[in-house]
Image (cartoon, rainbow, N blue to C red):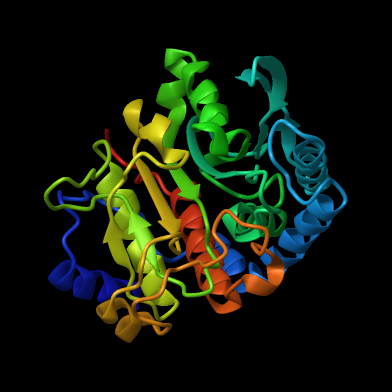
Length: 331
């Protein structure tokens, strides 16, 4: 089926550049993760993060107690799933005060550490709300996939999950992480997948990696291969996604700037759904993707659970395919 999907996509969607070889859709890990990882499972973690925000002034902004509790929750889930987990700190200055903020980084104990499949999502919210679509939806999806995978899966390449602080403060957490890597450690990252807002109530289905067109940013060499696999995995859920350019507004930005092949998914924020998108995906044309973007109503009951389920399955399949294949994107 995926071979047919790839042929259809090649005929109707431009990826800007030749994607090169992409990993096969077959394999036991992909079957395990696509079948096992679900939107309701991701929702469980999103609900836990909402409760953390409710106990801490209504948000999970970093720095702040809601964010610190979110870090502890995520690190605990990953340790219980058998991952090697660290919480590296970075310095952040705001309003004249300096704080230490933690990212969360977890890696499988199996697979080559010289070829790492890295997937990330920002863990913080804005001060105005609990940040459940933005971005407990992405965090919950990664936690659901990670717990289904376990810390010692049968993989060719190591899998690393990262959860970034201070994304809402100009991408500081992911930027500090990338800038702090040695040249060898940067070279070891085969690709980066970014998850940001996966359950917008008037959901779009955007894929980043290899987009073409005037003013677009297709990503470094190898990104078209990442985008192609994401498109195939979205198609396997019954969704024809739309290629969308990298625009520097999420945690993919420092990876793109470092020349690391990158891809991403998102369901839209304050933009407006077009009539063509409404016809393809449902929802309301002329209305914003997420009316609760960066506000107090960004809560669990605002999420599109079908979109979350579709994105969870697509990311699970994508991670599994790259983790078990020797066909990693060529830079």
